Length: 252
Image (cartoon, rainbow, N blue to C red; front, side):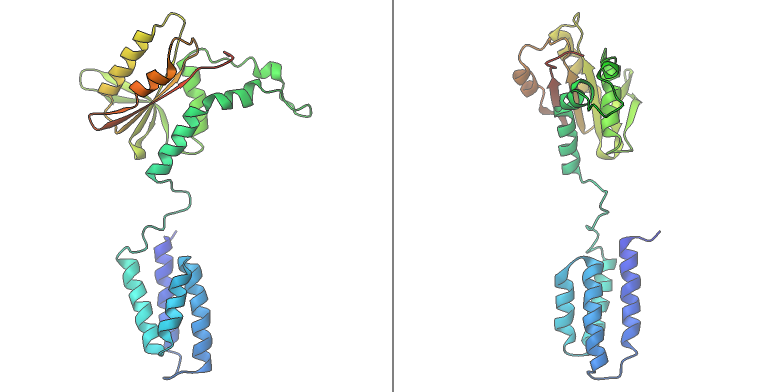
């Protein structure tokens, strides 16, 4: 399978060969070829300005057409058009926007999927959906991972790492973006202090650029969610720490 730039080079090389079939000097055939080639270049680069510049420069004749195509080949080979990425590639800024939205709206997925009344013509029954319970962080991790993996298929769960003093496991790890998502689910016998100690330890030992703490505060042990998140959204030793807390209105 060829890359988009390899396809461009093949097409431009073929266009160069076509120039040789025209006699010296302007002709009706050459004018039609210029018009057709300009449309090809516009589709090839998804840029109307390249086609317009080609028409403008080649109005002087075949030599200018040849030089313009040679310059396009040089630009492609030097990486001028390398920023034209595949449509399914997500840059870092949009990656973190997607992660943030999924984590901040996790409770909406729970409501829409498991708590909202089902359509009368559907085969899913609310009673059956109600049997699904988020009992601990492994349940939350499974559900959260199922939302993220269709978007980022390379995401992995329970990834072991060597922390030096002792080993750790990343709950959800997306290596290409240097991002770890650590899932927490609070319990009635868990104190807020215990939760903060776990977050502090993980933030210190996890050797990745971005660490997200996704906290499903099922037991509602966090007394002030806004203050808690503000305190644990920070930069620490070049690591970006992001903390999201969801407190369910209805515990499931």
